[in-house]
Length: 215
Length: 346
Image (cartoon, rainbow over all chains, first blue to last red; front, side, top):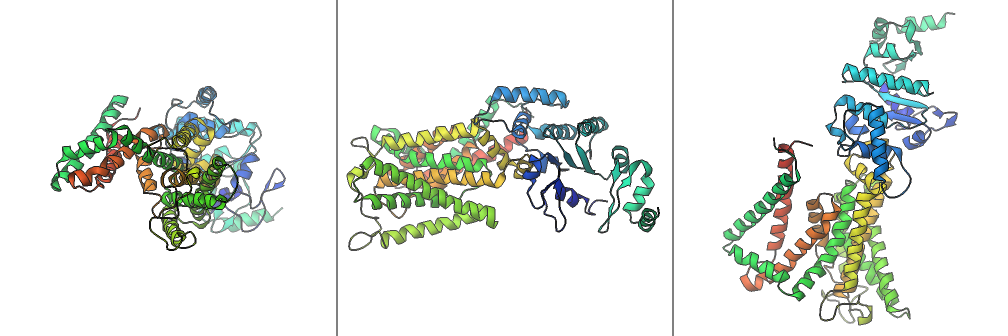
């Protein structure tokens, strides 16, 4: 359930919130207390749920976003390079928009595709808040297709969602947050929507503990 | 819904101009003054002779520098109200450097150059103070800048009546004028220094190129439009804000330096002459587009100079130019809001 700490957990993993205790290791390197950009340089990316508030820059075009994310060398903007980059990204992420479209003029699904297209290469971990909230079904399928591709290329994905079916369908393991507690990783192939729903509501936690305890 | 096109936009801007003129005319009528006489005098007062136009250029230089600097901070989403103080500190820095080198054997040209650089440094540091208050202290740059403006003014007065006072007694007319060889060279019989003009134009060209053609400018714009997204995109946001403060402060300092070396040749109490605030109006009017800074600043400078003779000819206060400038900004922003509501996005 939202507000149980999963959002803070995700942001802590990205270096956006300083953890009170414990360490954060990225590929064996201790990044505890470092800021998000240190994580980003090591292949960790955070995709926020509020696309227009934290993800994209309203007033800038798609091309400008691609160029900003790509960090090209040099001082002066290479328009030719930007145009080619935009054409390529728009095609490969199936974004319904022109290179010169301001991002706020895109639909939610296309904004999310744009956000996904800004991810760096290579990636080791993607942290996503509500990957498909408020999107049309076609975009949902498309976006999960792209994320699975990233998984195949070797990136781990941690996402939070309030859509229980989405959680079970697309994840390998599930963590449930409730009332200051975090569950053991649950195998999603062995978990049902009902079980998950009960755990979110605070039911069945003692039984889960017992089950963990027995051999 | 109206279609978006260059002509429609031009129409809206023209409407804003007409509205601003009509409202100023109403104010003139209410004051019992002949509006067309007043406008005629403003135009004649600014362009009727080469000397008058050169005076417009004298006012254009600091306004151009101030506006160019402010376009940078505006792009970064910052309201650098501390501009006046930064211009003042630039003037103080320049005066300080010149006083330091008065007895030296360095060539005058080098002294002037070093003094202008000192002014730019002082302006940049004063701006960095407002920037640091914002980034590390959580003080909004509007309040920090405004506070620092008062400090800068007080500092000028203290210097003029204290450590740098004229022999005998300090006076509101400022410090002792510098010897002629330490003035920025001027065109004979005019108050205009071609060097000052060159500095200002070069500055505007650089700022325009930087904001419209470089990756730095693009990142700065991203920070200004949405610094949270910019941060997630990997842009070091607070560093960019600080850099924009430093650059703006350096240009403000250059404006102050030119006021000292090319116009007054000494430090006077109101050395910034309101160019910082007028620059804010110009920067708002051009709406982030650095290329428009030069013509708009020229127009504003012409209004300022043209209205100087109003009190003599028509017994009107010369602040009429300020009324017209304020109206113009007000209506351009207002009409832009209306336009965005009416015109469909392309």
